[in-house]
Length: 73
Image (cartoon, rainbow, N blue to C red; front, top):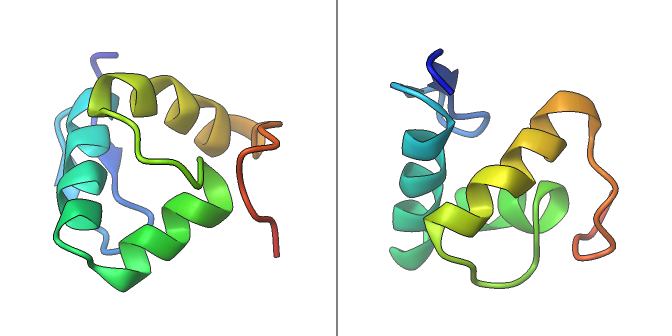
């Protein structure tokens, strides 16, 4: 994806969806609670590498996705 992506948690702008996935994985690995909660509720409850998270993010940001791997509130 060639367009920028904005972190839905902290608002940081990244170069693309791959960079956003890397940012979210990095923050989750640093135990940043709000990023982890967003991932759990919107993408997946499982630890995944950034490359796998990228497609989950595309679904979650496009239309809410349909993964049964997350907690919807």
